[in-house]
Amino acid sequence: MTGLNGCKIDHLGIAVRSLDQALRFYRDQLGLDVAMRETVVQEKVNVAMLPVGEPRIELLEPTEADSVIGKFLDKRGEGLHHVALTVPDLHAAVERLRRSGARLLNEPRAGAGGHLYVFVHPSSTGGVLLELIQE
Ligand code: ZN
Image (cartoon, rainbow, N blue to C red; front, side, top):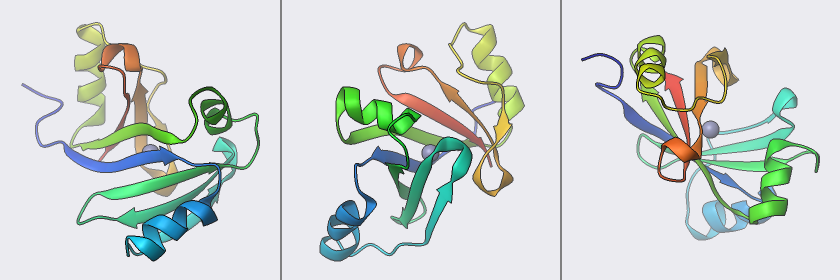
């Protein structure tokens, strides 16, 4: 058995129209700390990371309407966008998922912090976009 042993929840990605407005709740009202704020140019998104114990909440604000998050907001409105798990061996996990017929959205590629990640299509996961990240 390889692939998903030892996986952990890394973060919950939440699409919002305005980071500042969302932070009024998550930071000011709920009292979470903002560990990191950055713009990911290639994803056209502003990101804020708020640790909740070890896992984090990732707030995602589109920098352009014509972006993955911008289109998501148009279609679905604000809300949970994806669940992210870290796995000890991403390539083994990808192989295992492929063999069993799961629908992956991309080849493993490097994201923020240089960590490799893939997305698994909601049609394979019970309706939630799933991000798998190399630990
Ligand atoms: Zn994410």
